[in-house]
Length: 466
Picture 1 (cartoon, one colour):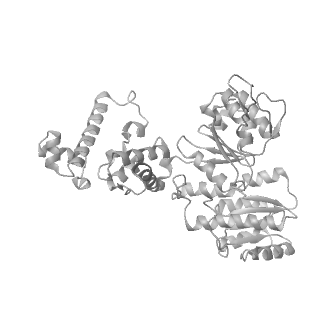
Picture 2 (cartoon, rainbow, N blue to C red):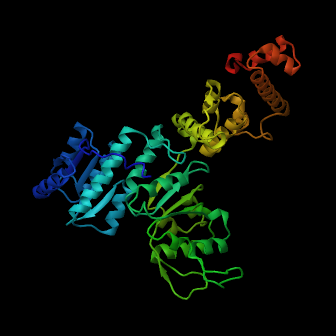
């Protein structure tokens, strides 16, 4: 399902047309009227900036060559001051170099004059639906959707909305577990090739020989075990999107093969004698800094530039704190349906558990959060999730960047382990006793006073277990 394409009425869309030719401004005004859009107009970039300063604009359609302030300078100013505004460049002097430059500068699309009226209408409609959908709700929903409550992640989603409609290669960068494949699927689902296949493969999971056979395909008898023809992902994704994860792990020889495919858009299957023309959009991902690898001669510079025409950096979960609890609740609903049944009640995320989620360092990012929620749904009693159900690691060593063999002394480490055991053990006893301190003390083999002392030491509230 296209999560961005949800709106039907475009009359609320705010569009600004910028061109130094009055006839073109008037023509685009009348054209957009078919969509129910009444655009503002400006005769150059300077006048456009004045209009933008006076009120918000969703989409700017601008000429490239204008007096006073041209389209490139206008684009730079808009992305600096109003980064959420989509910009479409219209020009009669279009070249591949200027197109790539504008796209790298944040333009949503690039159309050369004389443009086709239907093409401009369709593009404006697609961008408009994206804008209105993101205005009414953050992009989320299914278990595979994106949660973007935090401003840091909203900027990522806005960038995704801009690049989705272009055919340019995309490089998604971020730590493991940050959701690179989810973002890649979102780009595909909101692209012009959304109805075509989405093929994903992890380069780190396969040696060169298997990676080549998976991507290129092979003919029967090409090698031992090749008992029938296999078309390969490059062919299977014809007209669609290929998501190539962990590209940093590819060997230099395979990097060369991939570069040739991207340059020539042809492949030769293993055991074949003829080339096959392929057509796909490549989205690559890496949890390592490819720029640094290029500087160390560990990754081909020409391939890096091919892959990274548009780069999307994904933040760590700890850097998007406003998304932690919304993500937790999304995973909670999904895990309840998967683990407990479609009609089962969704467990309650208690305030102490929510606080534990907010305080955790999340070295495993979103994937670690999902695993913690899945575990909690399975082990929680009475469908109430408490901190110890989450199975979070103690943060003391990880959060400070100190390992057990560095600055942490044996006695200190032992004390931390004892305190963690005490807290988890007492919480479990109180849960089984449904908050009854006397019954919990009996379970633990402690006096009521001793148990209460441990509860005060660890700030454990018995009311959380009732």
